[in-house]
Length: 84
Image (cartoon, rainbow, N blue to C red; front, side, top):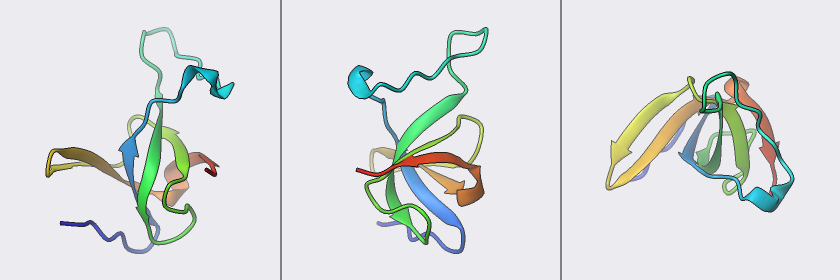
């Protein structure tokens, strides 16, 4: 089964940024950062498949199926895109 996004939606899987990327995500007072990274696995527009996108932890819709967790996120909720 494959999710095909429509309009301004992208599908991402969570991704842990390697420590050597040079990117520092500063967490708030709590231990966890409010910012996440994910790999685009499907896109209607804006981000290419395989791009790493930065987005807020609290946006999107979580989908669990076939042993994988993916998130449907609006493109306006993406804070940045790192091309691979």
